[in-house]
Length: 356
Image (cartoon, rainbow, N blue to C red; front, side, top):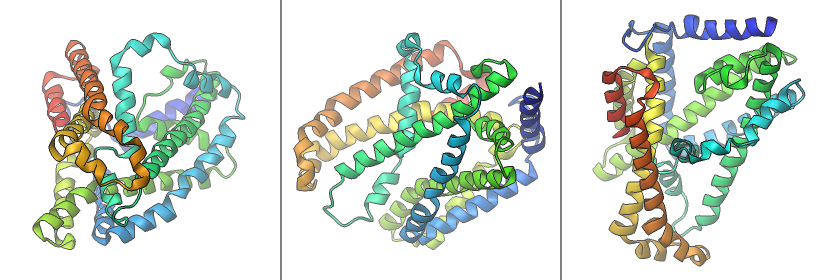
């Protein structure tokens, strides 16, 4: 009973005290001042990181990236020792075979992988531009993909361990304990902090880790646009970056209103589900048909040439066909069952977001 009450209080604090959440997306309710201020501070830090360019990216990667491993390792060690953890972890690794026929599962998986490695978003291209010309890239690409998946599994085991424990303590099935998205970080882990020695220290380290990950990801995602415009137009990064980040702040204020969580949920559904696949499909077509697969392959390092035929086949046929099938299936499914019970006008905005 005490654990059930802790879970309820964590959810209540998150929705009422932090988000000041309205009853529906129709009730915007005005901007939440504390969230707007935090949003401004974070975007200011991101802007400074973009202005400093490669130097900031190098510092972020070397100093801040190890933190998630250290913090999650401590949570992992605690999670696997809790009663009921094995049940939660089992749910992670035992697939529901019937769900594998659902295209939305595959779309969600592809979208998650795209975002996990920043594929199609320009981030990897920006990072690669800092390496010497002619450097091998295939080995690094494989390493990035494997490391991302390994860390995702590691984090999943940790989260599902805590979910299994909460299910055991509250007699509530795991799928009903908490929704996905920010609720995992702001409802599940606060309960986990109380199960560890020095809970306030771990709470501080955990949210500092989230802040670091968010800032480093934002720097990586805004850098490609700003750097490409500066190179194409001869503009100075120090002048363009503040303008674009101020524009991002103004257009993003909808996410720090009392209805902001609904907008975040809407964006989190439509953008990963559609936009990432559309971008990936477009890039395959442009590379293979526009720039030319053979031309690109001829520019690879000699060590990367042994898989040239596979890359050409993937860019020209395999990936375009698979991504097109997933995209069509998801559009049909979305038309048949509108997302989340949102009103038609909100779903229309979601579709517009999915088109970029």
